[in-house]
Image (cartoon, rainbow, N blue to C red; front, side):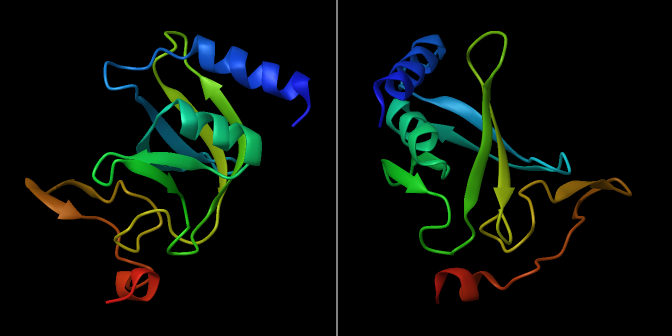
Length: 135
């Protein structure tokens, strides 16, 4: 990576206010439609890898490891732009999502809402999760 790109990544990382666990929330949004796809966490290494490779990488708290979106399922996110909010404590990743974003097989993770006084699923899976991740 050219030094100017390294410097830009370093300046971006310096501006991020990571929490006590070294994480920052990142909202993924489809770049051309504005659809909010998901929220996940990033650490400094995930942010740097995302900016360097152009492929979105998160930090999995349950696995305590980097999580390269689509690594298992093939449902990748290609970065179009990574933005930092005014407080420096939340990221917005504008992405081009391949397939579904949610591990439940839905296009996005925000598929539950109150309907008729009950919590209801308002979107059906588009893909069986077993097809994405195996049995």
